[in-house]
Image 1 (cartoon, rainbow, N blue to C red):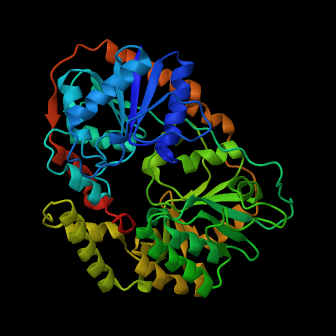
Image 2: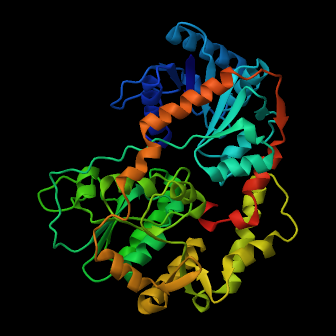
Length: 484
């Protein structure tokens, strides 16, 4: 058995981490494999890589075609594997990052090759600029017994099944989890005040306003830190708004600390040292793919607090894992919000989203989206646009007892919840709950997947109407200001 894994690049990031674990798992399972990527790998693992520059992000390609790229892929895979691959395993193939990939999918499907389409993200999910690249492609989602749609969470799997992918042609392939080691050279003093780390890059969907609000509601002497500033210039303006808010409201927050600010005197400003120095980890993200932020704290023995994402964490909870002290909503009184301006902003951004996707604005969509936002006497702070979050923040700092957390259909004061959880450094979960996400289990899932494909009777593909997929992600209840 042999497999060609395909991705746009091997630069540092989430999918590259997946490929590192995937290569380790396939090696463990005795499966011959090669990684075809558009850029070289510069990480610590010993990966079998063949670099094909045409696979990298490509918005236009006047001299290349999908057929030429596939020929290069076949040649490179055959050389590396000493024979043609039994299966092609494509990561994020419909993300709209390479103008040639749709034709590659079409040719592989037409040749009745064993094919895995592995989804981490979707162009249809808050990425309209990506979608423009594939908007005119009619044949994008092939269906056949020898093709499998692999998903990192049940939510995405359910959405694609609802869009028309047969259940038997899907598989759940959750990421392997190897938590970063916590430095022993920077231990915390047991009596030191709580130090809360948000170990992410500060992009929009990480909901930095809510992170700042939590810092303002926490007991005195508790400190908060965000790991990294965003790299994308498009996100810097919003990020700097929160940097300014931290300074203006004298919040106990340090932004973009890794590589810039030491966690304590005499220490280097490394990520490992910041992890070791922190007593708690936090997440306020409004959207995740796999949800690594919920699992890694278990392996590090750190308590996690913040916003739950039930459609992501449902998979983890089925495996018996206690994830942390999480809420579903951070509730602020409705009278703090200018409803008319919120409605105007909603109307404007809904229009922008649908125009960007080249889709007509459905009748009733404004009303349905407004009703999804309105919680009666409250709004969820995390589902407000940043401009209104900034207006609400001073109200919350003046009247902190009026901010509530909502979970399990009940609400309670956020200040009381924070005081309780920050007083303890006991992890909420058991590292043993990470076993379903071990490399060994990952290897088993891959071996089973490829064996299933090998036993399938190949057929010519049919094609899913791609508008069905877009419709799943443009549902009113899925709209979120921080993902526009």
